Every structure is written in C-alpha cells, then in structure tokens.
Image (cartoon, rainbow, N blue to C red):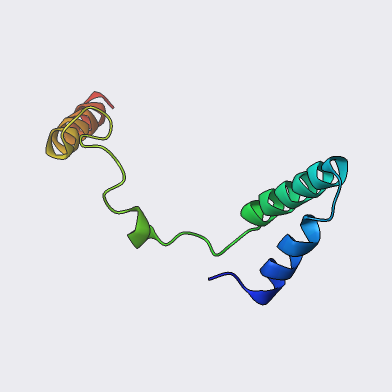
Length: 79
C-alpha cells in the first residue's frame, strides 16, 4: 500500500511538464543509487555459507590438505 507522502508526490508529478518529469526521474534515480551505495553493516561470515562452488579451487579439500602436508614435509627434508 502506498504511503500518503508517495500518493501526494504522485499527484503533484501529474502537474509537471515532460522536461520537469524527466528531471525528477533523474534526481530520484540518483538518490536511489546513492542509498544503494550507503555502507551497511559488514556481512557476517555465516551469511556466506554455501556461496562458494565446490571444489572452490578445483581441488578436493582433503586432497589439498594431503598435498600441502606432503610438500611441507619435502621442504623440511631438503633443508
């Protein structure tokens, strides 16, 4: 349901010329864009659950752990 302010503005807009109406639309679009860019609270990590594809880097998590441990062991043996 439209608010009283919205209804009043809509009625007033009917009195505008085409040029004024286009200017009003541009101003409202700019305002809406600025409001969209307004910083909000930072996202919570919990909100990101399930957003990454599996496997994330093309490698199974357990295979990555095994590979990196093996590489680390080899690097220590070389020293």
